[in-house]
Amino acid sequence: MPKLNENYLQLKDSYLFSEIAHRTAAYSEKPPDKPVIRLGIGDVTRPLCECAIKALHESVDEMGQSATFKGYGPEQGYAKTRDAIAAYYKRNGVEVDADAIFISDGAKSDTGNITELFGHDNVILIPDPVYPVYVDSNTMCGNKVTYISGNADNDFLPMPDHSQHVDVIYICSPNNPTGACYNKEQLKEWVDYALENDIKPVGAETKNGHKVAVIGSGPSGLTCAGDLAKLGYDVTVFEALHELGGVLVYGIPEFRLPKQKVVAKEIEKVKDLGVKFESNVVIGKSTTIDQLIEDEGFEAVFIGSGAGLPMFMGIPGENANGVFSANEYLTRSNLMKAFDDSYDTPIAAGKKVAVVGGGNVAMDAARTALRLGAEVHIVYRRSEEELPARVEEVHHAKEEGVQFDLLTNPVEVLEEDGWVKGIKCVRMELGEPDASGRRRPVPVEGSEFVIDVDTVIMSLGTSPNPLISSTTEGLEVNKWKCIVADEEHGKTSKEGVYAGGDAVTGAATVILAMGAGKAGARGIDEYLSNK
Image (cartoon, rainbow, N blue to C red; front, side):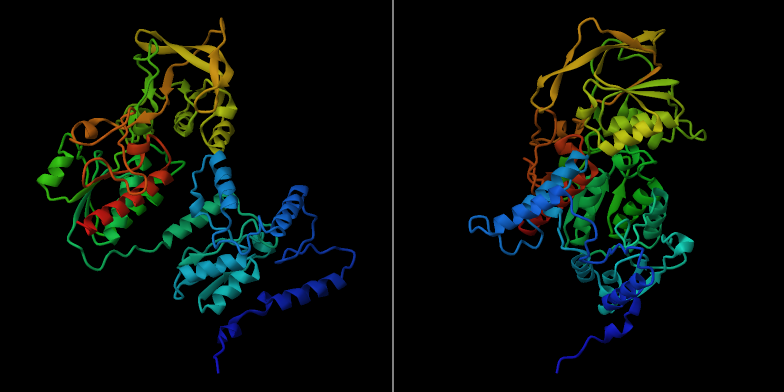
């Protein structure tokens, strides 16, 4: 005789589907003139839009023909759908691998996967309003559920109790039965609460006796070091700067990525895994990769040194005082705390600043200059449609008051007594598409004009510093001075040396750098396991 799962006895009546149905029916009878909008599973109370109906018809037609019949779909969802989702996020500046996307058939499927992923000795926090499946799935699995009631007094948006420890948090916002939606500040509080309750990582029980060096403590290096430590490797990270974190610390501003709340805690987690860190070590000067291998006993090296070498336009006046690269400007402000009067780091805040470029870094520089009290202009040679920055970043910059001078290209930095006094520009118009697929900007004859500024920030992209490649024999680089490495495993042309992140791709996103760090860890593990 099979045994019943008696956890069902712990289910609250209000969260049983039958009970919800009874309550809905009873309510409908009392005020028959007031319609009930049903938001439960499988309830459709509003007509579907035309595009959804069309897609459903097309899907049915496909399933009715042997040539296009798909049967049961793959567990992750159809590749076509995942590719479309990945493409959508990419258009909005977020790089997501289609293979990392999981398409479920609803909350029950999602909660099932979550309960399988996490152990059943976790404390689950579930703030109301939610769908029944959030609660009953965890209850039936034997998890301890801590429930926060949503009501009219808290606008159906209950906030966390910081004195209470939990392991997993379910937030059903805005897709909940009431449509109540947490605002940005409320979501930040939930994130802070999650960070307070974060778990400590567990390292390898035993070391495998292999020694690995990681160059750079940015997202790629930290990820690689952490993954290798979990596999039992003795890992040392070498950082050129005095503070750990790489671009997470010197490049991304505090208002986008809190250093103590997020970055410092993530670094501590890597340290807890047993990873050692050495700062103020410039590979190529303090020591070399060959010396690490030959003299210090490291069996493999991962290069995650980033791309910190700035680019300039090469126009007249670019050497004037008051012209910065975005890297220098952000490093002075973020890493060296120039915005804080208690620090001695100088920065030319400027009264009127021109940021040349249209990428995410340009938006960071512009919003930083804005916070330092300047009037800020983004100067970009193409139209808004071609801006390489994420749509969200452009929106936030505009929202904060950054002015956009589009289809505008600088041709000279004007100076007086060695200091910036303006920037001469020319109007542009879009011609035929170039190799990138974007329409090529063409100067409009006789359209020169001057923008009066006292500070110019060049945000034109970065490339890897050639110091490592020039001091490492047998390490192949491409024409952009990026290290040539296999994408799947990070393997370079030099035996035992792996690389990933911006040092390989040029300036890209944090998530891509982390992915490259994971690939490098896999490559090193495979190499040393077979050595």
